Amino acid sequence: MDSAKNLPVAVIGAGPVGLAAAAHLIERGLEPLIFEAGPSAGAAIEQWRHIRLFSPWRFNIDAAAVRLLEAAGWAPPRPTALPYGGELIDNYLGPLAALPAISSRLQTGARVIAVTRAGMDKTHTRNREATPFVVRVEHEDGETRDHTVAGVIDASGTWSTRNPLGTSGLPAVGEDTAADRISSSLPDVTGRDRASFAGRRVLVVGAGHSAANTLISLADLAKDEPNTRILWAVRGASAEKVYGGGDADGLPARGQLGARLRRLVEAGTIELHTGFGIGSLKSLASGVSVDSVDGRTLEADVVVPCTGFRPDLNILRELRLNLDPAVEAPVELGPLIDPEFHSCGTVPPHGAALLAHPDKDFYIVGMKSYGRAPTFLLATGYEQVRSVVAALAGDREAADTVQLELPETGVCSSDAGTSCDVPAPATASESSCCAAPEPVLVGFPTGLSHGRSGDSN
Image (cartoon, rainbow, N blue to C red; front, side):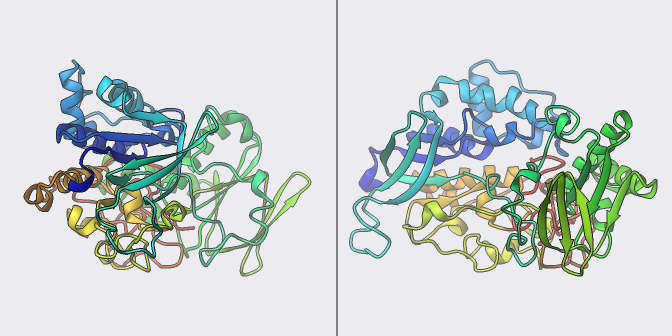
């Protein structure tokens, strides 16, 4: 970054990893410029504030961010408590974003629509590394403006681009036209969104923890609204990987989730349909008809798509990226996280060296760095940005020294789910996603997927 050392570093996204990147940049004496598409920091988490995380507070906060907060008199939450998404915002991200050091550099309602090199598209090579980046942003005032920066850290996540309901990675036939019958991926069925589900036929699609959370919440709703009918469709031959280890699970909250879900299915409260790969949807006068590829049909009033997420790479079309062809992660990271071959516990700590792209000083971090793989951990993201910022600051030794604390009981990404197109590996022992209990620090909720197909449907 020597040639553009007086320019800021753009951070795309003001979620946990984006704000951690900003904190590390500030500590290194670099100037962050943070763009958040939502109205506030943690806007994506706000949509699942009702979901509780599997992992305690001590694994969900970044060291540089904590140093900034504590200097302002912040009192950390009890380290062993399991926070809800809303508490992660209210007790951590909100106070962090409100610090003058962060708030003065944070632009909300600022959606990044493109990143390129100043004055050149991706076909031009001469002086490319010495040329600053241009980040094009749609601002909430309606104007589109270009911002010239020395480097870019893309921590925009994957929440806005869920995987489709259909097989083969494509939307089911009719999925787009039936959009008004499809809810968000993690609706608050007993609270904010209650009216959309009470007394209705609800079809939950997916085989990960977001599906499990939604199903259990629907069962709670049905106690007060007995006309609520709960249908559950999974592509696999059984739901065993969702149930997980039950009482034997290394993380009690996760084990209890699977055990309770099993009981609800066995009691008939939840109607499970296995081997149900969705081929098409058709809107009806009062609901939607969902057809499987083998000819079965389910009718529902609303469909909950717990199918996971994938990265939006459109904004990066003019950059030179080197992505793994399978999982769409940085090419050297891809083979280490491919859920067809690796469980959550086999991904080593990694930093700038593995996250680098041909366009120097551009990095994808956080959930988006894992592409379609669902095994991402918050603590992994924090170590990523520590290393990346060290590299941007020219501290190669610190950038190349990557490590991650290993607790006795690990935590996997909340919605550890296998790909929609592959079975869980034979070694999987957790309830979904490659599903091994994760032997590294984590963050993210009991019901949220981050990647390849997140919740396998």
